[in-house]
Amino acid sequence: MFRLAVISLALTGCVQKSEFDALEARVKAAEEKVATLEKAPAGRGAAAPTASPEEEEAAGKLMTEVQEAMKGNDYATAKTKLADLTGKFAGTKAGKAASRMASEVNLIGTVAAPLEMEKWFQGKAELGGDKATLLVFWEVWCPHCKKELPKLAEEEGKYKAKGVQIVGITKVTKSATDEKVEEFIKESKAKFPIGKEKDGSLSKAYSVSGIPAAALVKDGKVIWRGHPARLDEATLDALLKG
Image 1 (cartoon, rainbow, N blue to C red):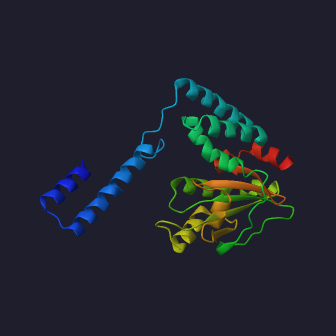
Image 2 (image 1 turned 90 degrees about the vertical axis):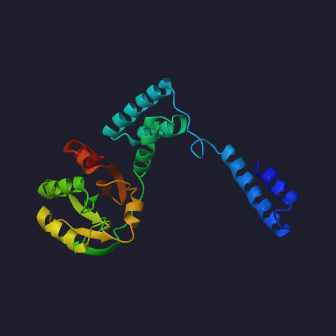
Image 3 (image 1 turned 30 degrees about the vertical axis):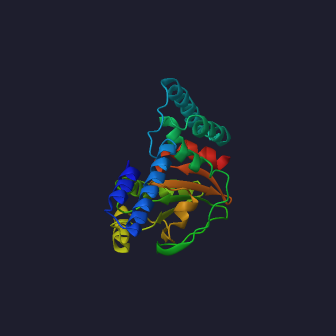
């Protein structure tokens, strides 16, 4: 349609040759764009296919099996089933949730990234030695973090008794400032080391996409990754023994 309009204008003498060539180029570019959109895969210019009820049910069962495996610290099984979820049932609700879980579970058994900080708000810490380390990622503007940090401050003695040191890690983003972080640390009564990471490198290394988040490191390797509230005493004891 556009090309016919351009040709019509040219025949009636309404445009000069240079103008005609420019219009012709614009029409060609528009036609190529339309052709690209028509060939676009689902999710890019077209609606993604909806998973069937049967697929949703099968994916839901797999997710339940993943969660049970993780509760039992059977990460090998969890990894295998998460791979099935993200591969065979990517379009289901469980499949989409599995993508984030997989990035966390796949950290288990990998070498832990060292604690490279831009600055320490209080204390200092390193990974290694006889101590296990619970890394807790948080931000001062996060309401859930504001609940978890004081809770960890109260339970620090229990962790120390088990040979675990706690280290708080923040990026100081959004409306936060160093001053606000220091003020909150005092309010939380946290005594464990808390530092500001460099350029989000630690968050990236530990696959942190939501906060609060935690990782347990022992003997230089990541042995657990998840929300700090999910690390109950029984799970912690099992991980430290393993």
